[in-house]
Image 1 (tube, rainbow, N blue to C red):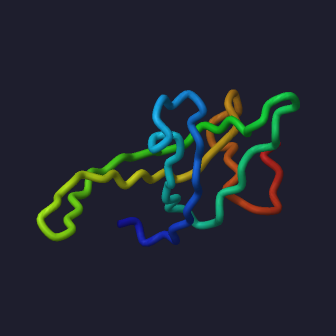
Image 2 (cartoon, one colour):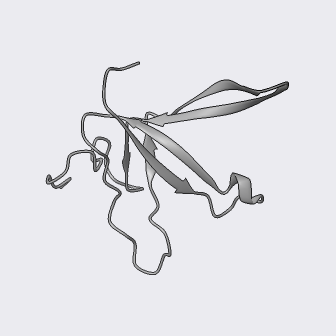
Image 3 (cartoon, helix red, strand yellow):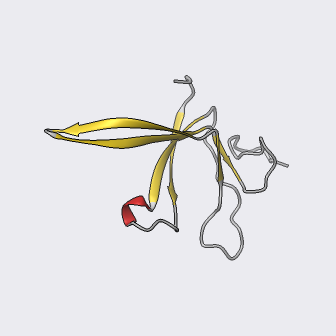
Length: 96
């Protein structure tokens, strides 16, 4: 691992066809807790771009049942269209 603190966030995919695929919980490995970008007027959600996202499979078992789950991680998040490195990962600091 990175040695950085892990923060969790849950994200919703409104285009998912199945309820079980509608949300995903992610781990953020970064020095400071990520802060979502400002809300967009007229939208019922906050669009974000996830920076440095990785997906790793993990085998789960319970008794004789076995299945595959996924560990989803990122290092930050930013607003769509923001310049690289303008994430909300540092509280109290403006991205401008």
